[in-house]
Image (cartoon, rainbow, N blue to C red):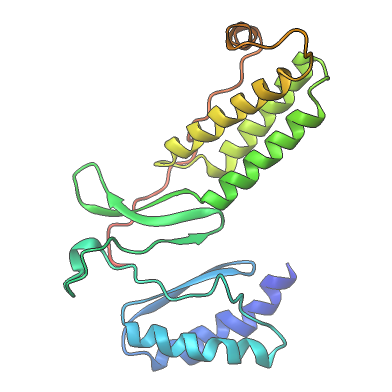
Length: 219
């Protein structure tokens, strides 16, 4: 709430009233709390704002994150006529990696997937929970793990992100098996036994529950 109130004046109003009227091309600002991305149609505009942004923030005792703040070329692949054969760059925002892909008809569209950092962090949390709760009753473990998978999908379960969702569930299942296997050193939890356990205590499927619009135009 404080970030929204403060940055409304430091960033939002400043960008609308002072920055946009001075640009050569079009630009837009997307912000959620203290995370934001600014899109430009002209590279020169992006570089000018990149230069003055730290000064604007410093005036109010704020700093831009040195590792997260960078210029990204995000043109559609078909628009790259400068001899660069590489793929367009990607960027992370709010736990998602935004990148260019192909739609069902083969046209370029912006897609989103769980960022690798967020996926790794989520799996580390699952690993720690399974380790510290491996001696709890199986029904209790199943219930909590199911809640964690559904909670993950409630945020990351968007159209086009099914592969990352399935990867999260797969590794969550493997981590559960890993720590159940360590409950009793004399009676190992083989995969055959574990699969029978899953039949009795199944984990929910990881599915996309949110529909998002594809972005086909230049951002």
